[in-house]
Image (cartoon, rainbow, N blue to C red; front, side, top):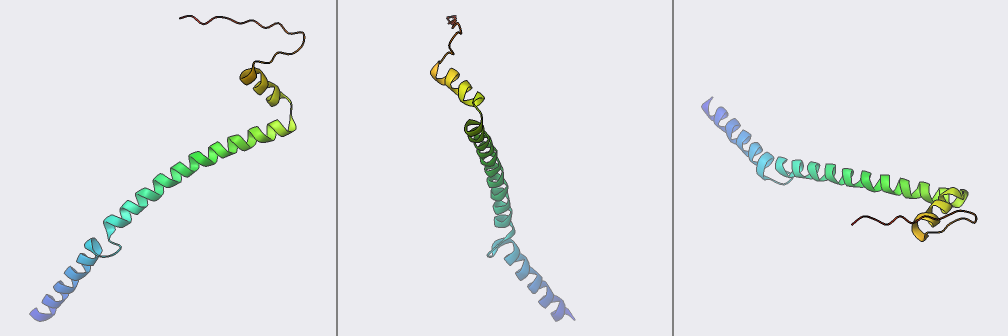
Length: 91
């Protein structure tokens, strides 16, 4: 009976060794799970940015309001009949 108990203990220790130190051990699995979670968060940020860019492209293709807004903000364009006021920034 003692031999059977000793063999079972050795087998248990061998399995524990593989679980903690062998290929595909638990610490490496946990590290991979953390890496996957970080990558999914990064991917979600990129997906959100792509959605915003896609919406802006669609708006530029379909309507003139986004095009007009962009021309005003980036190029300083003014419509005919409008008065342009430039306010100096305080230093």
